[in-house]
Image (cartoon, rainbow, N blue to C red; front, side, top):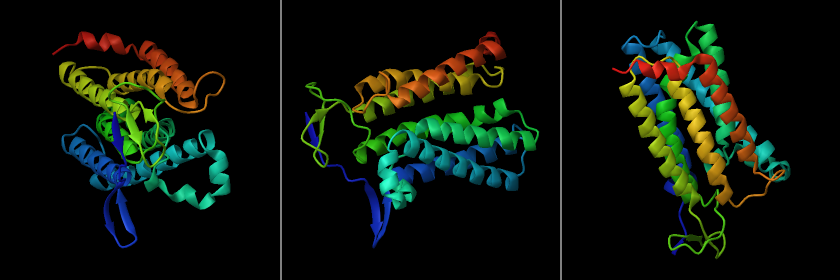
Length: 259
């Protein structure tokens, strides 16, 4: 058993606070910017430097707005109706993975159509850094003492002393480990199957992260909705969509081009 009172703040200057959560968001989008600029330099993405900066700004807006809206509407609507100013406190956490994915994907689709880019090639580029920082995001959740696990007597259980005296599954760390493994798996696919069809990396990500989320949520201390948690229902939808995408795009056939 571990007893913790984690501090979510990395740096503080007077009233300005930099939390692990906000730091992770900043690093994530800076990395995505670097990856897109590098793809443009290597002629893998037909966008100018100026267009990439505009694209990343739109991605930030789409991801944050989508993630925040999903969290507010589907997870804690009553709280935010009573405390509307808290809607803007994103550095305190409260971003939905499913909402962020939805918002970022919508922006990527719209921008790709405007610029006449292959949407599947674009999301394949975006998904690798996203997977890595989603893993770090769960560690930020751990320091924020949020997304709590159910009670357990296992020796590695954690007591978040700033919440209660209950020993819980550290599901934030389980998720972080799983997402890191997924990141390295996707990296392996990219290197091993160099001639894969566009969309293989993205839909593999969606399928595996949604499957992991579905099963891991059984250890999550959260109210259920018709027998499952809200995140599990969204995960089921994404699992079905990703399987259909694999079939429609014939993505598994692209793994035959091993180089």
